[in-house]
Length: 467
Ligand code: HEM
Ligand code: MTE
Ligand code: MO
Image: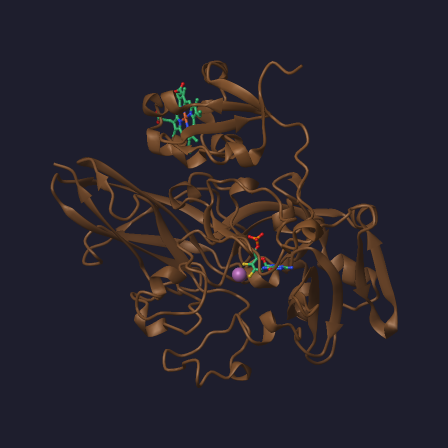
């Protein structure tokens, strides 16, 4: 008989505050760390971010925990073990199409539960260059399909009516594995700020609809050439992707990219089966997804079932009638989606991840941290930071190595240290400059659009300095 009681992840997830007790898991062990929260050297607020779920993705951000004394300390708080098999409720049994969705870390900031849309806590975003898989933002339009990897086949429509049907082992063995570190950003990142100008339709993303991973898979280019396509094609062509997730009418999620990007060796477009060295998690497209570096997240189709080359863009709703930008003068009565191009490469973006809005920071030296990124592989060449609402500026220090020219697919993390005086009210502002000297607009009003996409104005965070 087990010496400890068994709990499901769901039961652990109900313990997220000192009132309800603070439980966490590590491996298959369950801990009640309520009495340690106030003693934590990293602060009570930090432990509470992981409350109700696994410690591993958070500890991946803070290597101080990979010391034996930390695990010894944790062991004192053990109260149970995870149940060996947690049968996921079958969708059919409950009538809920989302019942088969995978378990998620309760520390994610959820913008919608069904479909699941969530972002990592903003203050953790820029703590590490690669986002741990469990904390990577998730943007699902539909229920997560349950895919049996053994019977999975990727269908690639070749020229002249021929088609390839690739099993997972075939995709892995027939094409060289290619690895790319790339940031994905949703077109709706930072929508919440834009909706303060005027309401918009869409999920209220804060600054976390962006994350970075090292992706591994076959190059789309290699698969297309293997299917019989040529490097060059006369005229306008698009490579269309379909997911295994479908709406109530049976229409799959779909999107497309221009043919030239799909076959370009420099564009690094992947059919990815690995994310940060692990197989793709279910929320991120298991077993195979497209990764289109430098391009809006919507084109990186998850749970990929079909690839086809077409003279027209994907007929999908998400290519034709969503993910497009409009003038601030266009409203829901006048919008005509045919008049605007589908978003592909994204504009330059940056945000402050630390401190958080409304924080009271200690006097002395303040460290401001954030991320910056631009679309199309354009590198971020500079990040300017102001502590006085944009009147005076300083240049932040960019972390990491210089990316290869025109292939800067991943964000840069940046940091600025500056002295701050007790009692001061600060309006911290950041803005990035990319390799084409594109800059961010100073405010959201002139780029407001009814769907709240492409929200990339200067990011502003107000904090006070403690006396
Ligand atoms: C530091 C334990 C959860 C963030 C530490 C240290 C210990 C510890 C013992 C000091 C390590 C040393 O310097 O030798 C724990 C335990 C946890 C937990 C037992 C869970 C029950 C977390 C979580 C986060 C976090 C979830 C982040 C979200 C930090 C940070 C520090 C730290 C940032 C460094 C503080 C400094 O700069 O000195 N933790 N931790 N910890 N922890 Fe945790
Ligand atoms: N692919 C499928 N099949 N279904 C989806 O809902 N969402 C897209 C894209 N690929 C989506 C999809 C959108 S809008 C974004 S921003 C990215 O996936 C998000 O990828 P992530 O959830 O791995 O972060
Ligand atoms: Mo998105």
